[in-house]
Amino acid sequence: MYTVKEIFSTLQGEGAHAGRVAVFCRFSGCNLWSGREEDRANAICQFCDTDFVGTNGPGGGKFATAQELAKSIVEEWTTMNRSNNYRYVVFTGGEPLLQLDQELIKALKEQQFQIAIETNGTIIPPTGIDWVCVSPKDGSDLLVLQADEIKYIVPQKELIPQKELILQRLKRFEQMNFRHFFLQAMDSPSQAKHLQLAIELCKERPLWRLSTQQHKFLNLP
Image 1 (cartoon, rainbow, N blue to C red):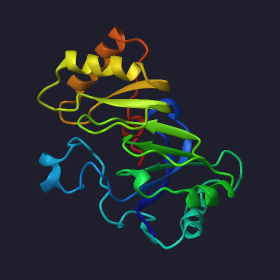
Image 2 (image 1 turned 90 degrees about the vertical axis):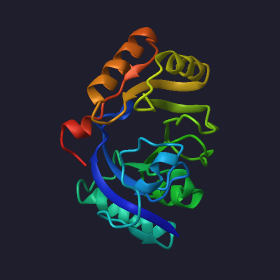
Image 3 (image 1 turned 45 degrees about the vertical axis):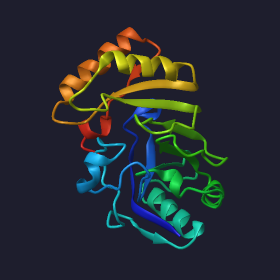
């Protein structure tokens, strides 16, 4: 059984694949926050800006089998483009690796999809995923130390930027085996200040590139 908040087609707005057409499948549930506001203050991840609770989003629901969920993803793609070429699905959440498994990967590969995930890095991914983006959360146990992309949100505490502490973390991540390194400003009422911090950090550690949430600027889902 797969529990899905929403399935929708859009453009990837962040990271190395920004601008690429994709179907997003957002799983319900996360291991670092319940998704409920009353639990945010005590959660490991307190800055999430995404609703991943329940199944009431467009295309959301409970899917009994991998084939059922793959069928819904294919239907979302084909409403946009009937070609088998360049099919791309991004699994996100919440934390997608609580649910994404080998059976679903196989079902989508049979439909010519490239598969990407956006994960907090606390669960080892199954094989067969084409693109892994890790977004580490302070206070969690990072287990995925090798991936295509790391996207670190700054700052992770609204009131305590602690630039030197952030720099220490960036240096630690740089020793890991990621292909692309991105910094992204935390989305909040203080985003302009956070964006300036991210830019300053990129200047000090030029291995890192700035990731912006282009889909929000473009009013895309």
